[in-house]
Length: 266
Image (cartoon, rainbow, N blue to C red; front, side, top):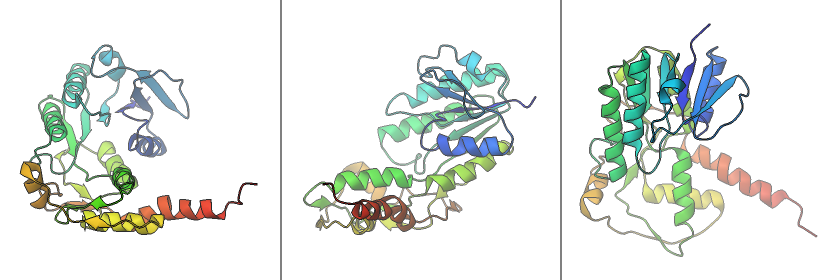
């Protein structure tokens, strides 16, 4: 019987897109979650807490490939070290980690934990692959929606981003998971570099809303890092195909049109 692929965070934004691709490739999948749930659609679920570390050896047992997608606002480095140590003890042959672009240079606490997680994977003694994708379209949309609630939107014009569609990430990641360990692979970014005002303007147009935008500087070390483009993908990055405009048309404009087409409540 083919060994299962263990996916942490398999019910999240990226995991829920990756798991079906692995199943379509004929690979059994085991998903590590925080909460118990019954097996479904060919997926086995195991409930473990990576931060606590209890029972991880049983969760990874028999899995030759382990994909680490789970994350949170705190403790990613601890969780990754716990998982990497268990992967080593189990004799896993491939440990795959998803990080983020700019993790080397942007002085943000969350980025530092992602970089520490990368190092835990690289130092685990298990053959490994690490992918650094840019910010997901869904994440950027959430930020745009929150900012659009302000009467005037502060929009530093020097900030550039390369948002990538999570479906492009899932497709690319599936190939890496099913392939051989490759170390730190080229970054994955969206098809275009866009400033924050451009991202916000696209959202407002799709949502049919108007808000004035106020150019403001982003101060300090973080501001300098973003103005210098240190958050962007490294040279030689792979580029996704789905654009920010495509994503907005699908998730914002179409939803707006559907609401407008509903008959008024009596």
